[in-house]
Image 1 (cartoon, rainbow, N blue to C red):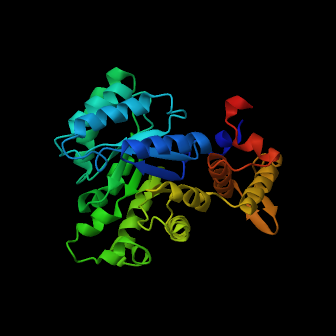
Image 2: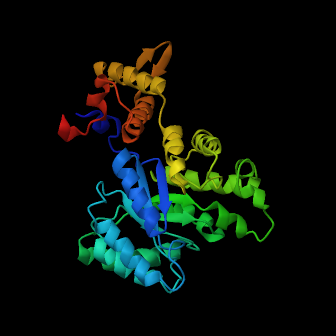
Image 3: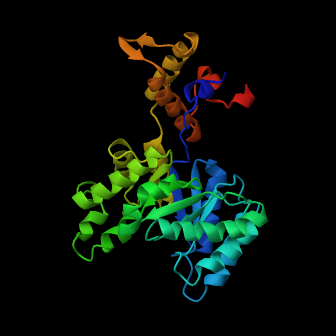
Length: 329
């Protein structure tokens, strides 16, 4: 049996997505991001933005442009999603019909902004599926932005929906929803990692994601030019809050985010050594450097190798049998 089959018997395997979700709104930026993805490989996802990317009065033409780009040969890896208008917008249905109707099989996912709770998400899913199913996509993955009080309250229920694969925290709208009770400083570092209401919101959303095996995506860093702040935010989001993915709003943010979420080489080597010994022991308990390891820790270290592979890290040859899918062995 393949390691993944041994370690996750009867258990849900963790859902893993590229660590960076890069947003692009204008045609120039969308094309630029596609060119960068072709250069770097599928180390990051691209989200074409209809909500903030379409100029007022130009929503229909923008949706048509997005559909055309998603369907183009430049979508080489199939890792491009789209943020739709919110469910209560007069442009939501138009986005779904135009984009999902034309590009259902080429979309990596769609993003739902500003739902006020579980019922909004269910209504959106019904509309999306009504269009996606006859166009060859029975279960188009959906990412949900948690940026309202209602969505945070229902985060566990939203994360439990099978079609939802990611919850993403929208810090600016969430802070604004407090109408001045939370200061603007909580939208950026260091306040976003210390203000109690923001910390609570992030932790509850992340906990909901991990409870249901979904991906938790951290909010944007607004300091576009300072890559050190971006890297620090990404590192803290992962190490202190349990996020496994983060937004980018500028091409210069992509590499620092990917690097921050990529396991270090020392972690990869440790994981490889532990899992090799575990395989030799037929996945029974082992002791390495005076520490006990069993299937609980084996699942952790298997995930380390999967994250490293997803980030494009060159893995030791000895790790190949562990991370490659069963059918490739």
